[in-house]
Length: 154
Image (cartoon, rainbow, N blue to C red; front, side):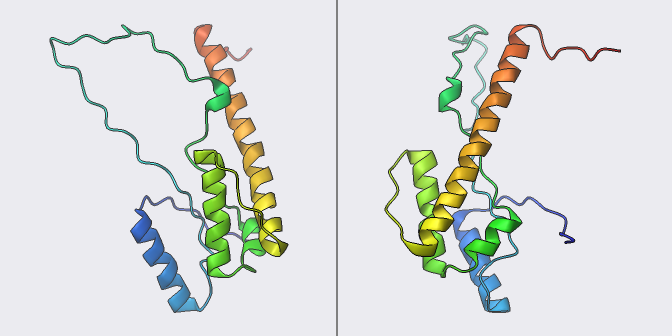
């Protein structure tokens, strides 16, 4: 299977909804060829004035790794094979439940049928991706505490 190159574009929720509507209007299909990644905008950093000092003076408290989440998640092409079978409303409900579960910590509603299979498939894969992300963060913290990444043997 020859897959197209990926391109990352940042857009608002409104722009994303318009894009999905346009895709549906043009092709008569849901946006099956799009990979959508929802990320939260970064908080702006306010520089300290010359008279101010940093409250932590170079030391900052690190968030426990168990509470860290990656900045987003991927919807892989093979995910769409299952998700294409859902109606637009069902797809929205599944994706909103995934967001609510991982970002807000809310218990998802009980789905049935294809929605349940879709939700559980995405949930398990995202949990695996989060575990890998946390392992990478933990390794980076360990390396950073020891002066940086270990040198490659020559």
